[in-house]
Length: 67
Image 1 (cartoon, rainbow, N blue to C red):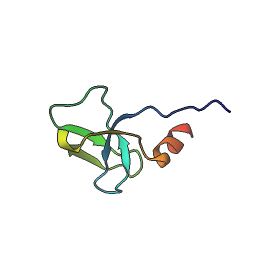
Image 2 (cartoon, rainbow, N blue to C red; image 1 turned 120 degrees about the horizontal axis):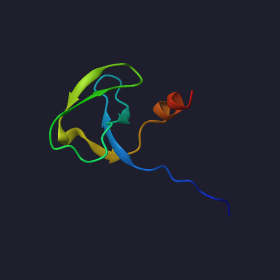
Image 3 (tube, rainbow, N blue to C red; image 1 turned 90 degrees about the vertical axis):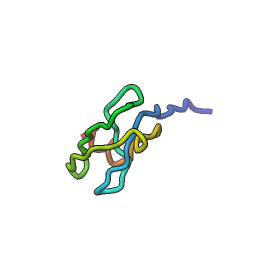
Image 4 (cartoon, one colour; image 1 turned 45 degrees about the vertical axis):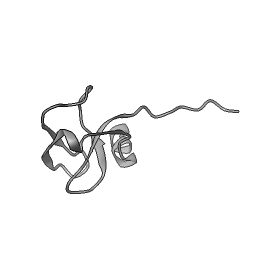
């Protein structure tokens, strides 16, 4: 049995343009709207607290961050 690394969950939003989950850039749950720039398509949008989820960002975001 090998060592398994688990991805940590973080606050993410679904980009309104490319429809991929991207990091929200916050450490705690926001109680006001936040502005997030998608690292994939470059779209900057405002997101309500109801649009912020606890999950994992899209694998394309992680791949782009490594390069």
